[in-house]
Amino acid sequence: MKHSFTVIMTVWFIIVNAPQFLPALDRIEPAILGIPFNLWWIWGWNLAISIYLIYCAFRKWKTYDFDVEEAREDAFSRGLEVKE
Amino acid sequence: MMSLPTMVFLFLGISILVYLFICYLGYRATNQSSMDDFYLGGRDLGPVVLFLTIGASWFSMWFLLGAPGSFFVHGVGFNSFFILNIVLGVFMYVFGRRMWALGKIYNYVTPSDMLEHYYDSRFLRLISSIVGIYLLFPYIGIQLLGAGVAFELIGSPFWLGVGSMLVLVTIYSMIGGMKAVAWTDAVQGIFYMLLTWGLAFWMLSKGVSGIGTLGNLFSMVDGRYPDFLKYPGSSGYFTPLNWFAYIAIYVTAGIGLPHLWTRYYMAKSMSAFKVVPIGHILFASWGFVPILVVGILGKLFIPDIAIVDQVFPAIVLEYSPVMAVVLITAAFAAAMSTVDSQLMAMGTIFTKDIWQVFIKKDNSERTLVWVGRIAMLILMTISVAWTFLAQGSIVALSMIAFTCGSLLFMPLFGVLFYPKAGKYAANISLIAGFLTLLFTTYIVQDPGGVYGGGYALFIQVLLFFGIAQFEKNHLKDRTKHYHEVLRKSIDGEYQATKNGHDWQTVKTKTN
Image (tube, rainbow over all chains, first blue to last red; front, side, top):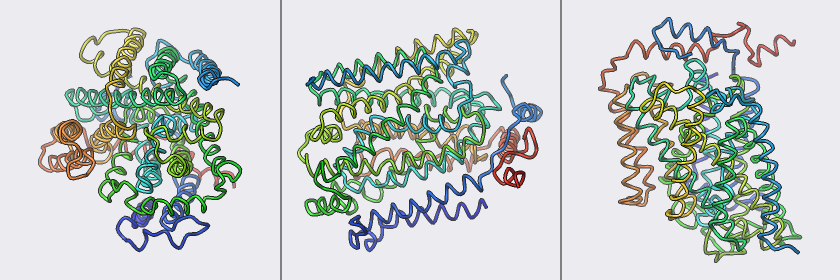
């Protein structure tokens, strides 16, 4: 899961920034609903990644109950200083 | 009909009463003798309040005044802000969770607590707290500057705007503590974000500006300013190098700025870090859509405005003085939600990292809370002096603060992900980055047309990884254990119940 998440985020980042380097993507036409193509390029990919991240947050990302005392004891037993 | 200044004072008066009421509730909910309670809200902020306080502290006068001014000047060159806030949202999940877990285990209150503890370097605590306090002067200064600029626009004196902001925020930060600040932030954040969306699309409508649709808006601006909608934008400033320098600086600053860093310690539970990134993306990345609309409206209808930071209130003033007054009230809310957080951060850093470590170690917690309050007052006074001396646009000035915040990111990266780096890598790279920033800010500005902070960050990264390759980490075993404890925290090996609360498990249980 971690791997595919990193790949998807990296691909999104490359694609969404691509008009900086590819003049063919940095153009106004074809405008969709009057909105320039290069703006659609950002908003469209951003919308896709936003939906993906919402999916991840509710279905993929794991968070846990956290027993802080147990963690502190473990850290202390390993010689790490833990302030009360 | 009331005069504009009278209306502004009336609206501000009403909003101030609301904020003071929330402050009172926060005061009641805070144990005033506990540093954890006063500075970190007792570490029990729920996910919604947490994301709103992060979002509202991240945005500020900069968002309502600086960003429309930047779209006005740079055109679509400023579009990187749509992208970087998504990256930042993801970073909040990746970094925020880890920072929260470490904060819980080791009782960290400030960023320097973590850095000194991990790198075993008191010197690093000193430098990072100096950078942390230094960056807050321009940052607070921007908010005060914005208040003054907004007041000037409605015909009131600059100093009155600065003064009102100063008195109000100082009172409720000093008295209320972190809970009061977080709750007020949440209310202020919702208020100014809804207003921004509402005003932008209200002005766009046919009955107001006569434009009607986004399509018409873009075709009009393209007809008059052909460079506006094509990269690098109308000013030509946002070349690919500056585009990526801004992304790198803002994203890392969103983690490293002390008033945001400390917020990652404040979550009640790890699950808050599912809501915070999503909330941030919806609030911050998509929040730039109305700002772009406003910037373009300004370009079309008031192209000759002298102070670009006034573009938003000035364009609203064209159509409705009452709405302009509401906007100025919202801008105050935006500024207050940032200044209060920064004041808290300043007070915390001074008390914990300087007073308690280098001046007087054995004060009671109650005394330390008072030391923080007095420090807030003194540091706020310095920020005011800075405001009157400052030159430059709001966004340009904010970049100094953001770059300092991003310089604190690299040592943090070492703590969370890069055990190879020791104290020399952290110390030397931080000092070199900071000196480079000072050099490119005050001596040779933006060499080669590239934003100076980009050089600072680049040099820091280079030195951090470079030195780490040769440095003999004398705490190798300790570092290994530290990372192992962190890994176990994140992987759920310290669960109160081994079943955990991840969505998969909950779903399975429900089924």
